[in-house]
Amino acid sequence: MFPIFRNAITIAARRLPSATGHLVATSFHILSKPSIISALQPGFLTPALQTVVPSCGMKVRGRLRRRCKDCYFVMREGRLYVMCKTHGRHKQMSMVKDPKNTWILSHATQGKVRPW
Image (cartoon, rainbow, N blue to C red; front, side):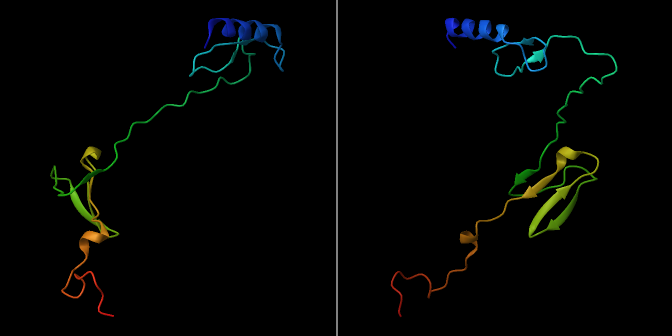
């Protein structure tokens, strides 16, 4: 943003009171949000921050194998899975073949011109 334009917006924002009557801090960083400068009143709960819980997804592989003694195979909806209760990072699932590659071609279906 241009420095002159940013300064004009900052000055205008400081002159206007917010709806609650508190001063609002202005920041032009993408990830920041306006925050209330005034102290929180006693008796109100402070907002809890949301934390991100990392979780690994399934590995999609052409050939599955067990990686430890606790890994086991499961067949669900035509797909083979490897599950492991000890190590979540061992989870795998097989690739699904494209239906076009599973067709069985015979002499009747290979010609370009149809006989009918």
